[in-house]
Image (cartoon, rainbow, N blue to C red; front, side, top):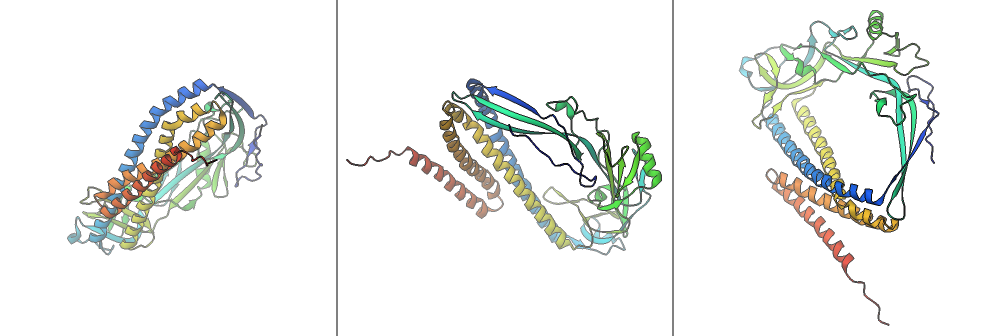
Length: 409
């Protein structure tokens, strides 16, 4: 059996790994009848996933079209203003401004006793924990049964995703303490941007990038709150006895801030001197925030690009889900063919091709129907492509079903 090998790290910064010396191999056997029963049940799941894919694709196109309309509306009506005064004539209008932002008081992490001067304080946490990895190999036997050999291996490493050791295949010797500390953000309740006031909702849209190292007193308070020794190590706080030899349950806590007087560019509604979300006629709202000086045109262009990226990501997810769902509906054919393994492989190649072509075709139809109302040319074009994909499937079936001519003797 193949064994998993990992190279040990040698620095805390790069992530120390310690391999467990006891990989576990588990062999399971599944009969042909059990596999067939599971595949038949999977047909129902497949139809449910087809419906889910249609809903996801339809919702995504509607969301994308709504975002395009909202951004187009905002780009037409946005009004650049000076940040040093609030003009009553702009009340209720969509405005754009750029100015340094200042928040009163300090941001406080009450759980650990850390305070920082800034608009936003963000906390991230890594744990040194056992992590389970697995590798499986499946072999189909004559008669349709399957044998699956899974090798589980364990290593300790730094991870920002707490690992639940109760779900490990081999729990003994690989227990992780409960993750008691998680990432969090602490935003100023109100911020002054020039003569305007910005709510916590505005500041929460920022990303804290500037490193912040707590003071010695704050580090000591962190250790007291967590019941462990806390020390500063390379712009982070190490929570544990010895950074050179981390133990399971040790933590690395990193803080970042958005400093005072950071220049913010904001597109929002002017509401009695406050910057709030602008209610567009499409039913959506507009509130854009970014650090640095950026024009309204640049901000709307970024919003359009972000919408386009998200649209394509969700399209990819929807199409992949559709193909997988159709594959589940056709899966019993492959299991039936597995009575003779090489026949099952041939059948699965055919059903995989059909699932791929049909999944793409159905997805294109759903996307096209969603777009026809907004961009008829694009929607109709997609329908044509979908029709060509369906025609390709029918042609392949016809070609496969056509009798092979016998040469004259």
